[in-house]
Image (cartoon, rainbow, N blue to C red):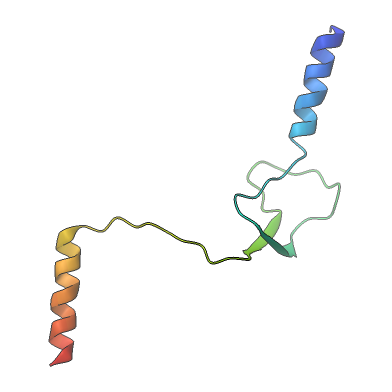
Length: 76
């Protein structure tokens, strides 16, 4: 193996040691000890966001109309 290939392999291995969360938050629970060997998709941490998360949900118009009809029926 060439020195360049060895360096690229080491850099890839280093990247695989980093966990990057998709939002700012704090660790509220750790499921594994430091330096443990992990499997793909294995839970490692539980994070809690510092700020409220916002979600966009697509809802069909027919579902909205049914929901409104039910609400009108309850208001009587």
